[in-house]
Image 1 (tube, one colour):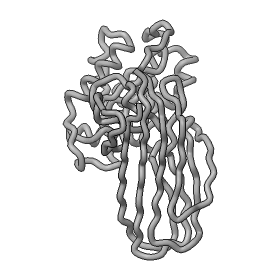
Image 2 (cartoon, helix red, strand yellow):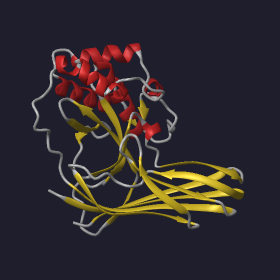
Image 3 (cartoon, one colour):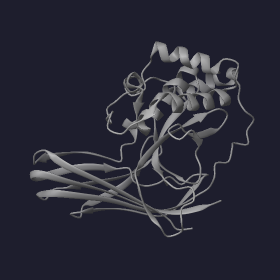
Image 4 (tube, helix red, strand yellow):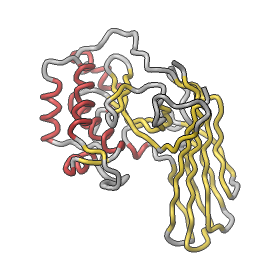
Length: 281
């Protein structure tokens, strides 16, 4: 069943003193792909700023803006209307391990197989990956990795930060969706399965009433290449579906933060983030 949703993501900053200049990037524009269609999107700021859009290396839409008038507050709001569909498995034949380890494939997806700061190599977790993939096809091994992370980790907000790596989260055995995604990526890449981090939103209710606005939050999941891109949500142990709105893709969180930038002047900041999501149809 196709869903139509409105997502409003608002971030407010307050500074101790006047900021004289700031340069920023916002990744708040959902993707248009085979599973979802963006009907409307706008990114606005208060105070008003000059902005331009471009598509980054990974295919994520970026709104860049700068502000050169003194200010003590900044609000950035992304508003979108998106139609989403259930996940449709790729029609291509499933690839086997020989296919995945072929030279052309590993060259093509080298960056999605290489360790990063968030998804480093780890000997113990590589051993877990070998056990999970034993006797399984790549697609089945990916599903096993998702289930394993979901079962072994406890979802507890506040125990990790945006700087926590997959190994650090695993040492604690707890974290949030970002940590679940990073840990799953570590297992998949240890198996030799190209995989990428996806940022976006998840409607919290599968039976959401039309027109009802719910409190949402940014969400993260993964996509694994097993002959085609399969989307898995390890936090909820489900295949990505119509409740998911994808925004950014990359190697890990560092490639897809909703907002990042630099500024001069001012002091420490207070931050408030509000996400509202409404099913329209």
